[in-house]
Structures are given as structure tokens and as C-alpha cells.
Length: 476
Image (cartoon, rainbow, N blue to C red; front, side, top):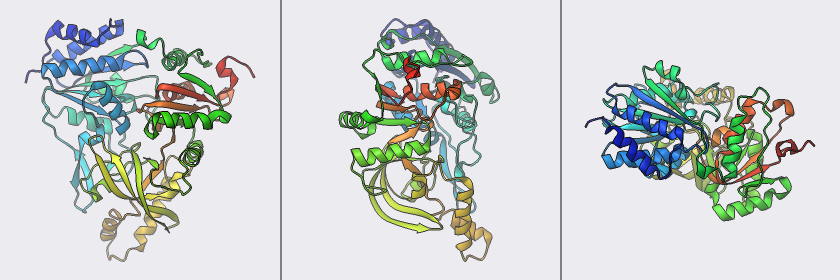
């Protein structure tokens, strides 16, 4: 299959399908896409940076339609299941998580299921990777993903076949990956280190359709002060989709939101895991009437990559950090090795199908302040389990450990309220954003990036919760 694009006809068709007069940035992006699809050079990419409301999603949706009508293969990828769901919705075709697409299980010599970069046969395909600002250099977690360089593996997969090209889409105002100062997948120099030649187009002009949105107007206002040494965020008022609220009105607002949108389209975003736990407990008790620590219908979020449990229930595949479960049944709760565990049945949408899994989870992780079980405590757990075995050799005991349900127990938190990093890549109809504990000295560029990331998770209604009067133009 030829990898060339049909010259200016492609650009004209793209703008036609866009359905409105393009911004100057969208015009530049269309020209850059034309060059990307027409080049004969291998290992080429385009980085499309776009802020909230600048029309990158409509542009990509039009691009997918144009390429599909021309018979050119397109592969849609995103870092998390929620992000893949959002991408699929606006592109109008299935999308996959990056991990699910690029990795395959591989049996290692000691019997442990590891993973390797998968081959593909999509010659000439354009790989569209959304929410690329979230992609770090580390795959995350230990076990099968310990030490993996996710960005390296992504390019190894994509460019293993001739004629492939990649479009990396991201919002530079959002939070970078945990532990990073910047988003490497959006950085030309970082990409050059992988032998990838990338052009960059940045969309900054807000499209006309976004000007009536209070959510996008406030996102644009926050973006405009990111370069300031001491930014002073102020919310723009007068919009029906942005609502100021406090703890006194929260209960009524939550009840209305859950009744209107349902469990899957409401999220509360806060600054800390401790606060997320407190809000989640409030939702569980007051909205759903849950009294036990885990109940049928509970929504959980995985907080550490896992490659063990899907394989115990059929086909091995990654259950990624940030994926969500719905609890179907709670079978048993027990305490072992100084921690508490529960055996549960969950429903999990893996991006292609809903799977039912029997898993063991660590209950202690639900309430701890840390994002997941601290590594010293995890090592202690595994040492205790390892030392309980009677196998004669260390190798035999290690093999047992890697298949031990307690050692491999899933780490989960409630999914009703989450931190901004955990919410990143997702969108919900209604989002509540809690100011959290913030002094005037703590309001800096990183706080503005956090606030921008949080409020742009909302697609229809944004509740700004407990924000100081200064954010609304007051002084007290």
C-alpha cells in the first residue's frame, strides 16, 4: 500500500470534513499532516500540541474520517482505558490502550509471565496517540513492567513495519507524567533521541464553538497565566456550566449529579489521596448507602500496574494503573501477613470487551495517604510470604512467590474521588474540583497546571468546591 497522501486534495478534504472555517492553527496542522502522510522518510512523527478548546479533537475526528474514506489504516491509542474511551467517542472508531496494543505475554524460564513488545502488520498505518503528555519513560510498577521504557517500546512497536507514521497529541498545559518536569512525548529533542524525526504544531487559538463554554473560558484564562512567575488565578463567572459551591451544598449537588448522569459520569477531583478517600466515603455512604468496606456495585480504581490477574482468569493482559472496576460480589475478607485482603468478583472494560475477573485486593490501600502501598511495606509482605515456603531452593520459592495470590494482590482505591493525576486522560459529564489545602505561597505554576488539568476533565458541568474568595475576585 502506498503511504503517500493525495497532495492539496487531502488538505482540502480534511478542512471540508472539519465542518467549519479552520483556525490558523488548524490550517497549519492540516499542512503538517499532509507532509507527514506524504513523506517517504521512515520514523517520522508529528507532535500536535493543543490546549483545551483549540479544536484538536474535532481536527483529529475529521482526520480519521478522511483517512478511512481513502482506505488508509489508522490505529488509535491512549495511555489509559478512560482516555481510549474518550478518543474512540470523538474519532468514531475503536481505540486501545497503549499497553494492550504494544505488549504480549511471554513465558520466562522461571515460569513467570513477563511481556515483550508485540509485532504488528499495519503497514502504512497512521498511529494516533492521544493524551501523549501522560506518557513517561517508565512503564510503571514492578514485576512484568519494572524498568520498561514505555516511550521506547511504543516506537519500537510502531516502527517495526515500513511506512508507519505517528501523530502524538497532547496538551502542554496539563500535568506531566509523575516524577517528570516535562512530557517527553511532546518534546522534539526527546524524540530525536529515539531516532524519530518530528515536526511540531501548536494550537493556541480558541475555536468559536468554545467561546460560550465557561469550562473552556476558565481553562483558557488559566493557560494564559502559566508563564507568569507568580500567577494569580481568577475564575471567570457568568456561565451556567461553572458553579461555585461549598461543603454545605455539596450533598445536594452530588445527589443531583448522580441522578442526572449516573455513576460513570461523575467525578470529584482533589489534591491528596487522603482527601479523595474522605470524599469517596461520603459518596458511598450518602449517595449509595454502602455500609461495608466493600459492597456489590462499588467502583474501584487500580493504582499499580498488574499483569497477573487477567491471566488467572483467561487471556493474560495488563490491568493498568488508572483502570476502573465495578465490584460484582464480595466473597471473603481475611488478614494475613499484617495486611487485610478481600476476594472479589469484578467487571472490567479492557477497551475492547467487558471481562469478569476473580481477584484478590489489598484492603489497606483503600485508605492509606500514599498513592499505593509504600515499597518498603510491599517488600516486607513479599519477604514474609517468601519465608513461609518450604521449597528447598531459593529459585523454587521465587517461582512460588510470583504465582502467589497474596504477593500479587491488586492495589486499589475507591474511584468516586481521585487526584488530578489519576483523573488525567478521562472526561466526565460532571466534575467537582476541590481546592484542598492551599496557602497563598503555594499558588504557583504547578498549582495552575494542576487546576487546569482538573477543570478540563469536565465536559458539561464544573463545580468549584471550597475555593477561597480570592479565586473569585474577593480578598477575604
